[in-house]
Image 1 (tube, rainbow, N blue to C red):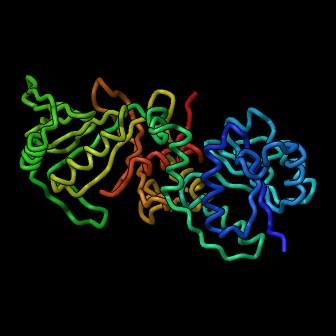
Image 2 (spheres, helix red, strand yellow):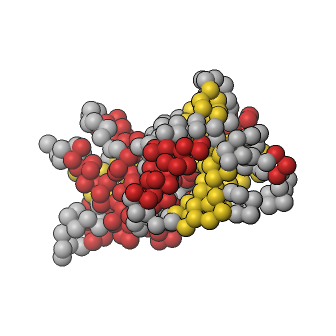
Length: 375
């Protein structure tokens, strides 16, 4: 009995992105499904008539996955293959990689497809195969499979540069007292935390610069983090980022360059300090902003099953694939540095969170329009 056939329509320049997906699907289906991929070196043997073999693959296929990337869109070949397959009654499924298929023009945007935005989204391949071929293969794609795709597209940064595309800076503040989401109050000795941080840097021979300003604030510059240690808040400063604090605080200004390394150090400093709250507040660049209207946020999220709005705070929502929380806020700026108002997105993370999780979430929010381009 002949095996069912899948057809991967793609640009040959995207081979290194697509081939790992084919290999993983081959393992999941235990070789019981044939996957035709013209650039894999197997589907079309050397010396064969390339066009003839592609035509044969199209005639035998029952499902075609059309990989939509910036490269494949510029070549136009996927339109030919997709049109031929559709005319033959083959199920054609557009798959967006770095391209939002919702923004495509006809005819591809008229077909039901999906964007690759997480490990879980990759399992759409398996669910479609199961449905079409009446199989029960396990949905075995995980986040690391998605990270591998990201790294292939963006290089070793894994797409981390995307953060700088949308954001101008990032901050995190340690304060002596705050209220958790469940209403409980948490207290910390900020002065003790500062001593632990300095001791950690010294004991691990991590080089840093340290100086004291004329106002008495101590600054430490280390691996992309500017740490400001302030023993007592001066309310007359009307500082935007720290409000209503009368005791010591530590503010982390976080560089978005070499962010992967910086993020790992930040997590370590928070961990050794014993501070419970973990978040990064991202500020938008000149060309980006975010939606802050509750009903608009609700409308957008309602059509995206990977996002779940908080039952009490409508501008707070979780991202299911990585269990991260995003909080959208607007605050009045209170200094000459940041006049008027500013919108921000806080990402609440966990100790085990990888930087790629944050990148995926930010990209996802941009793809669905919560983060938008001003120009």
